[in-house]
Image (cartoon, rainbow, N blue to C red):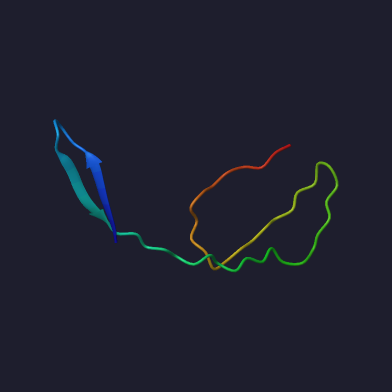
Length: 59
């Protein structure tokens, strides 16, 4: 739990608490090494984590 104190209106201070849930980093493994030539595709799979972000990789 973290206590936050911020300036409020006038000469007052606003105080609140925030609970943080810290999750350990997952162990990652992309599988065996693989090679690809330009224009070819490689499928990557993973497990053990929580998807937080989704994106697309391009050059």
